[in-house]
Image (cartoon, rainbow, N blue to C red; front, top):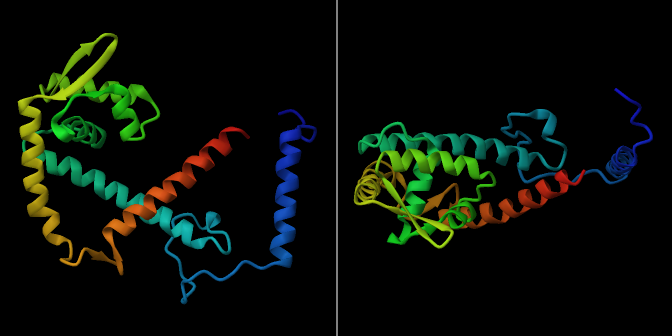
Length: 203
């Protein structure tokens, strides 16, 4: 490896880190809200003082995401739509949404998918299973759920009602927060991570 000491980018990052260390020494981070001081994290090296709560959130998000993905595949298996990945299930429900055709760009935008080849793979699989169909309007490709695909989505909704929705408290409260409040917080946090991704790309 070459000498990176003369790289302006490296010098800038090093200077910023040095300034942050000085700030940390002169202005200790405020205590987070956990009174017991114990945070459930998966990467202790990322749980920096004052930001342990974000590491705990990231771990919870990771576990919840895997549980959600497992639920989606199990839910579709229960209605006979086997061998679908979590993304396949999301794409199918997105296409079936409001019973109107969706363009590829619509689906990429709605599901926040950055790589089109992932969507292409799901589309091919769903079309082969006769769950969706393609049509063209000019150069634009549109996707729509077939009757078989719509039926699978409706059957999934019934399984979801019986297996998942009945578990949710009647007051819609989870850990002293309403589910819609948690959803709003996740949308805000999504914006933070999007900005951080752009910043990291520029380094």
